[in-house]
Image (cartoon, rainbow, N blue to C red; front, top):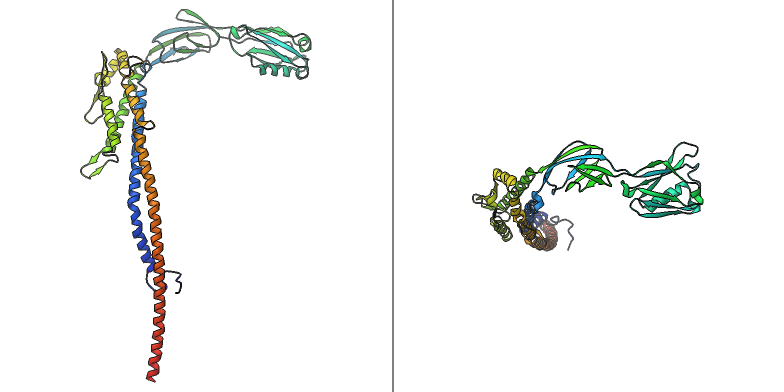
Length: 451
């Protein structure tokens, strides 16, 4: 049988077009698989949106789950000699801060030598610091230049740094010893160069001594000394950075606006979650189109737990529910915040408000603790959200495998059709050739008979 290089050449039929139509029809079998796979992927994305909304509520609840969340303060100050940072446990009040002396480091220089890179001989340097600690730095004769001695002291890393100063004289190079920290505890009480070697060359120049001193300040009439210019503990929860002498007034007040903002953020995050749930589970009666997660059991479980959290109550003599503080649950599931009532509670009943959200003690949970724990459990490994999405991801993978198998079947079917069409094309071409030959023979026979 003759070989046909292109379908339809031998028969004159549009076998190639027919094969394309058959392939197109076969590939329609892939459409339901792709649609199902797309449906699973859309649900995974929807759970991602839901998890994001849950995370925002959890974060907003976390900001209300500690008593410190309700002890925020704000500060204002006059005077620029002190920079101030205050934590949430800083007591409310007014503080007068007078800085009379900043802390300084101790330093002293040696008498000069002519060369800084000439060996001066082996020896030891014995140091005693203001806190009573002692250490020794040793140099050998081959590494005993002023530069080597400097490097040996710095390499010891013991609270003293050394540098070399050129004073421009005939013996210009001086070794300067400086405490790494300010204050009298870090001061260099004594320096002793051993006799012999460089000890016979280097001597201290007492006129260059700069005495260490502690910081001195007064806070509301109380005299305070500090080894450093960064002072902690002079005011509870406040760090003072002493930049210059002078007087600074610090006013610490309760950050009521910040506390109200945390409550508002919680309500906004919760309402955003309700909006996401509504969109994902809605049903449009007019179009008959439902939300991506309409009727989903996992979403129903999430909604049920959230309703229990919002409608729950605590054993408390003051506030036992969210409704008691002006957080009203509306028909559509959202919360409404009574700003005026909340402002009054923050100003006058902050302790009770703190107990409602953060618990009355470390052993008791408030509403914020409950929200944080419940939503965290939903999103943790093995929780509702992960179990749902992992199941969908398995289905997506299964659909992908099914798609590959179906595509292989289609390719095999089309290959079979192509072979059959090629055989048909060759057979018809052969028959046409035979027909043409017979026609020629009959025509020749008819011509002979006429003669």
